[in-house]
View 1 (tube, one colour):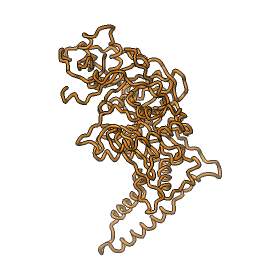
View 2 (cartoon, one colour):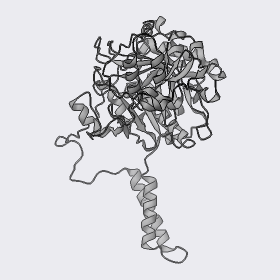
View 3 (cartoon, one colour):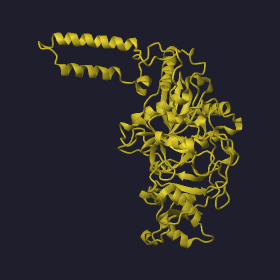
View 4 (cartoon, rainbow, N blue to C red):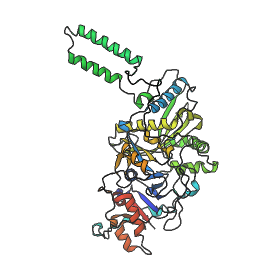
Length: 527
C-alpha cells in the first residue's frame, strides 16, 4: 500500500428507514436517522461530515432524517472568539472560584444553577441496540488501487434518490446497529430563547423616568479619574493637558473599567495560598498507548458508571467498562500532528477535571481542523451543585480560543445538536453568538434568524434564498471511491464488476448525504 493511502476513512453505510424510540418526545418509532460505521476516519473528513449534519457516537456516525424525524436536531456551533459571557455563565464561574478558594457551598446547594449536561445528544443507555461491524480487519486493508478505467470517463448519474434505507439493516443482513438515543438531562430547566421584557408593576421595579442607579464602585472610579484629570491639568510638564488629550484619557480609562470579564479572567484568576481545594484540568489523548489515559482508565470508567446510573437510571450491566470503551474511548478519528496545528494535535481527547486528586468530571472532545467538537460529558453527581455541565462548556470554549492561538483556522466550538422542539434542550442557544446549520443547503445561519422560523415549524430550511442549493451535492456518482476485495476503485468500475442486484440506490443515497468531496476521499466498503 502506498504511503499516500496510509490514512484513509473507511466506512460501511447502513441507510436508515425504520424509526426507533425518541429520548425527547418518547415517540416509540419517531426517531429517524441515516447511519454508517466508521472503521477509520481522518479529521478532515469528519470535519466535513459534521458540517453536513453528521455526528458520531463511538465509531457509529449518524445523520438525523431532518424532514421526517419527530424531533429535528440542528447542528449548532458557537463562535468561540466572539463568545459573550451571560450573567448565568458568570454566576457558575464565580461559584466555582468561590468553592475552590474558600470551600464555600452554602449558597449553591439550593439548586439555583441546575445541572446542564451540555452534550446530551447521545446517551449510552441502550447498548443492546448497537454492535460493531462484522468485517475483518484484513478486508479493510487496501492492497491496490484499480486504475483500469479512468474516472473522467465514468457514466454520470445525477438522479436524486429519496428512498430511505433501514438503519437496522445492512445489505448483508448481518448487522444490527441503532444510533444511541437522545435524552434530556433530568431536572434541566426550560430555557426559552425569546426574552420579552415585562413592565414593572406600579411602585415596583425601576423608575424609568429617572436615570439608572449606578454602582458605588463606578462612582468612585469616576471621582478618581476626575482627580487625575485635575492634577494633570495643573501640570503636565509645564503645559496644561489639551482638551483632546483629556477626552482620550477618559476614553482609555472607561474602556478598561467597562471591559466585561472573559472566561479566562475567571478560570485563571489567582487563588489564595490557603485555597480550600485544588482543581486541575488535564487533556488526555484517547489512546491506550498513552500513560495518563491508561493509568486513569479505571477511575474514569467508574465515574461514567456512577453518572449513567444516577442521571440516566442505567442498569449496572449497561454501563460497564466494555460499554464505556465502546461509547467514549473507541474513536474512528486518526490522530494527526501538523506543523501549523495545535500543540496537542488533532483527534479525540478526554478533558479530565481533577479535584483534590480525584476525577469529578470528564468532557469528551474531538479537536478538528476548524473546531473543538464536544462529544459527551459525565460527572460525579455528588458535585452537581457546581453546575459542571455549564462550567465544562465554558472551559471548552476557552480551550478552543487557546488552540486558535497556534491554529488560526480553529475558531468554533461545536455543541452537537440543538433541538428546539424539546424545550429542555434549548439551553444550547444561550451560548452566543451561535449559528445553526441549514439542513438543505448546509450553510450556517445566525441562531437569531432561525428561532422565529422554528417557532412556526419544527423543521425549517434556514437559508431563505430559494435559489440556493447544496453546493457540495453529489454530481458524479461514478467518482465515489469504493473498497472492494481490498482494492480501491471508483464506483463506475465496481458497478461493472458487481454480481447480484444493483446497489446504486444505496450508493446514491450515501453520496448525497456525505457530499461529493467526502464521497471521493472516503472509502465506501463493499463486500
